[in-house]
Structures are given as structure tokens and as C-alpha cells.
Amino acid sequence: MIPAHQVALFRNAVPFWMSLLLVPVAVIGAVYGGWTVILLPIVTWYFFSILDALLGLNLENADLDTGEDQLSWYKAITLIWTPVQFALLYWMIWYVTGPGDAHLSALETIVLFFGVGVITGTVGINYSHELMHQKDRGERFLGDALLSMVLYSHFRSEHLRVHHLYVGTPRDPVTARYNEGFHRFFPRVLKGSLISAFKAEQAMLARKGKPWSDAKNPFWRYWALQGFMVILAILVGGWIGLLLFLWQAFVAVWQLELVNYVEHYALTRKHLGDGKYEHVKPQHSWNAAQKASNWLLINLQRHSDHHYKPDRRFPLLQNYTEDEAPQLPYGYPIMTMAAMIPPVWRRVMNPRVRRWRDMYYPEITDWKPYNKALNPPPR
Image (cartoon, rainbow, N blue to C red):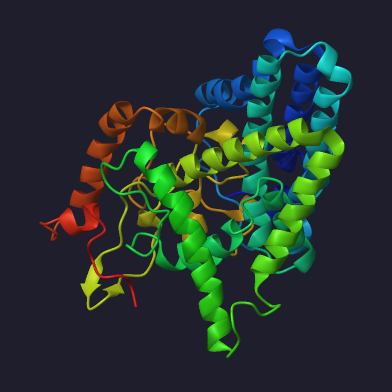
């Protein structure tokens, strides 16, 4: 247990600021071109995977009595990232369609903005996830702004009103099914999450006697913010700027859904009958204790605790042992790469799923309804 007074120290918070290192890497790729345009995915995926191998696991937990005022250095990185990403994204669009157009080929520009999407997805959407869970309206707005930069604003509604309530059940489109490859999961979740998010907000308004078109529907805010980001991309970079904006947004969403795929693959809550399911427990999310990738992802890999206590800020998320939650063999950078190759993914993960089932649900003998999401939707 790390005492609260130590948690509050800047030196303990500063490793979580490593995401800022990606900003100069992006600028180097834009200014110098050539082989440097591939640096962003290399640093994000491979460099942090190497660091994970060198630095090992972080099994320590922060004192849960640590006060909000002692987390200022941790909160700061999530607050400053929104203006940093906004400036970087639109500077990149301006540069490659203006001064940089003379020395960057079309292929270099496409590869470079693939890397930009890796940043806006791996870091930006992840930070928006932290911000959307907070009570402060300013923090939630910053989260909305980050999501609008990748045209995925409905993720907030889907995550808070659908995923956290129905994870591990047929009603959650984001829970990947057993033997479902990512290439089948991705189009299913793109459609399903948008529909489920809109229906969730519509149902909430209906309970208050209001139609979906009411001004309180957050989708109006989502569409306005997204429209602003799109128009700004056109103003800054013309139609090429818009295409590059859309390309990085697609890559960012792909990164997000890769992570969603990994986080809950084949982990289902027990159906108790008549549309009732057991409560969400740490065992319903894959946990990963790799140190460096948790720095980059602000402890997102401590996902078992996030679902168990969604309102905990990221520095207070707890790690779980093998006896308490299923463990991934590697951090998210390696696991998301493995997810892109279904035979490799199944070979690595399916035996772990079977062991998880034997450990937690030995009484269940027919897993077909869980594998195919055939159980009744939760009430």
C-alpha cells in the first residue's frame, strides 16, 4: 500500500505524463518526413511494450483514503491534454497541407496521420474516458471535446448508460464474444454502440416525459461539437485537411475498439434466470499490471477495478491478483496487436477463458447461450 502522502508527490505522478512525449514525435514526423512518419505507432506500441518487458509489473496499490486535493498532479495531465491535442491536430493539418506539402509525399502524409490517429485514440479517447466519469462539468466538457475530435462523441453515452450497466450481458455491444474475431466485432460494435447510445438517451428523456428531440438530449451537443471540428479542419486544410481529419478519426476509433475488444473478451456475467444477471465483479474484466503501458494509459489496464468502482480516479485504481481477476499475459499494446490476428488471439486467450470459466462458473455446463449472446437481455 502506497501511503497518501507519497501518492501526492510529483515524482510519483510524473510517469503518467509520458504521453506528452508523443507530441514532439509527431512534430518530427511532419517536419522531417521520410522514415520518421512511422515513429508514432512505433513509440506507442513497440517502445512501451519494450518498457513493459524491462520494468515488469506494478502490483502496488495507492491508499484509497488519498484525498482529492492530493491528486492534483495526476488530474493536471488529463486537463491539459485536451488543448494540447487540439493544437497538435490542427497544426498538423495546417502544416501538411501548407508548408509541409512541399516535402511530404501523399504516402508519407497518410502514414503520418495514421500515427496521429494512434495518439488521438490511444491517449485522447482514453483521457476522455477518465474525464467523462468525473462530476465536474468542466472535466466532462473536456472529455466531450476530445471525443468530438475523433467524431465518436456518442461513446460517452454508450459507456456510461449502456456499457457500465450491461457489461458481460447480451445488451452490451462492447463485450466481445467467445471466438468472435476482432474483424467481426469491429463493424458490429460500430453500429451497435451508436444505436444503443441513442436509445439509452431517448429512454432517459422518455422517463421524464420528453421526446428525443428535446434540447436536453446530449446528442445535440455531440453533433454541434463534431460539426465545429469538421468545419475547422476544412478551414485550416481545405478538403485534403478534411480527409486527413476523417482518416485520423477512423484510426482513433479503431484503436478504441481494439482496447474494448481486449478488455472484456468472452467474460460474461452469470444469467440468474428471467433476465436477471449477477452484479458486476472484478472477475468480469481482464486485468493487466504492466507498469509502462499503465503509465501511458493512466491505469486503464486496471480495468477490473474500474468496473467495480467506476468513480475512482485513475491513480487510485487497484490492482487485482490472479485469485481475484483474470490476468492478461501482456499489456494492451501487445494484446491489441495480437487481436488483429484472430488465430494468434484465440491461441493465446481461449485457454485462459476456459480456465476462467472453470474457476468461477464450474456449475455452467452449456456455454453456447453465452458464446452467441442468446441469453435474455437484462431487464
